[in-house]
Length: 66
Image (cartoon, rainbow, N blue to C red; front, side, top):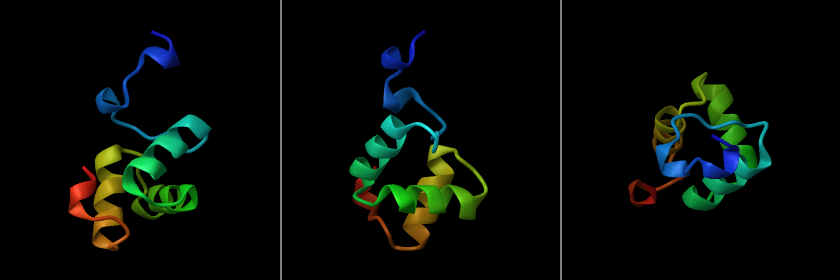
C-alpha cells in the first residue's frame, strides 16, 4: 500500500518527519506543526491518541477537534 492510499482516519501514528502528516494533524487540530512535534516529544509517543490527549490536557485544542 502506498502512502497516498492510507487514509488519515485509519492511521494510528503521526510521523513528525513527514511534512504531509504534520500539516494534516496541525490543520485538523488547529495548532502549529511545532505544537505537534512538541506534543510527540512531551508525551513520548507518536500515537494519534496520545498526542491528542496531550494537546487536550494542555488546552491547545478543544474536544470538538476529534
